[in-house]
Length: 262
Length: 352
Image (cartoon, rainbow over all chains, first blue to last red; front, side, top):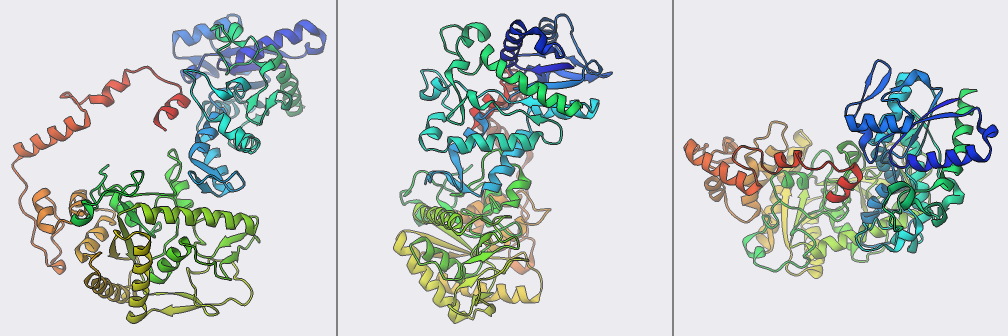
């Protein structure tokens, strides 16, 4: 099964996890053959579709492609049986931003917020998540190839960021958890991203064993991510995950793609 | 946006009670007639206590009736319903037949059945939702210095069992057992009494509140005209009876014009002037080229000439400078094009 993995910086955890799985038991993963393509942040918007290929419009993006894929500067879509999209700017931050000013019936009362019908929350967030790189890319792949597409959102941030630190944006994790609303926010995130992707791709939920308090990732899955992925060091990167996280994802990818291809 | 343009002269001198809210509130409105939307189009800042999220698209906002009035209280438009809303917001008991049932068995708020396209799963959910809405209405009534009440009909529906007024029953919805809505035509005496009670309730909440009545309706036909004539008479009577009630039939006409698809954009400054307590001559002096006075029925003089081009150009340049535009037209917007591109989430965060 030839799998094309496309993503932003969160693809790093998947690559580290893949290497670890392969090192531990190569035979178990012999039938899965991933090729990685990506660009940091929102870099994947600088691409175009040309003769059945995804072609970078910028030199630096082409260089990222080459480095990650082992030499290919464009994605030849016909070369793959299925596609796996990673991150691409879909995260729980968007729903937390909504939660700063609005709540829906069923969450903890807060007189400072506008209370809305749960269906409004669903429709609004589904529409918002539909306007993301992840959904755009899924729609393009599905329409061009007709092959299965699975997707995962960006991982929740590491639990230790909850209390914030100097210079870190406060997305409201702590308030959501303290109020008891976090599990419902996490569920709403999964529900609305699933709905946004539904016409084109299958959303793989973040594995429950990695999730803490509904909207965070347990610290063990972020250990050393600063050193290995962002290169920042000093344990300041709460957004990216490590190989252990990546290893929890691959069984889900294989299962979903195999089910759709069989 | 203009913060305090809607103030009658006397009211504008009073300190704001809630620095977090614009001075003007509008109770009632829908997709066919929204005084709030018109005032905003005129450049007037209007309080909104149940706003949509900032990134909402127009279609979804319209479906859930966001942005039509300061609170999501539905069309309203008749004095009895407005009075009931104010009484409910100040602790009035919930009438026995106020919870209706949608076709799918879910529960809907009988006082604003068109606000949500969906019902609630339980009466408890609906009760918490309604309580939050009424808290917002109370915050509005206590926070604004001018409350605009759009009046659009002298008819309605009454629950014969207890006299409670309701909007029309939506298709497929069911009333509680034993409840029957009867059509009613309010006479002048009833409406005068209702307004007196409404005025007393509002002043008890906010003694310095100024009430501005606006009479208009998107509904066409003789019946609607008759309704509006009656409402205009009532509004004029109320304004004459209470020092803190304002009614200006010219504002009605201007807002009706603004609601037209081909509305002249220059109507906005005129509406601003009238809402700020100025008269039509002030508006003419401020916006000389406006052609709002062509309607002979309004008894208003014909438009006067525009100022010389040079003078207008100077005014435009001044306005451009105020917006931060540079001589070459690039301004802030142009400079932003060269700025570092942020990822979408960061961009949204920055503008939230």
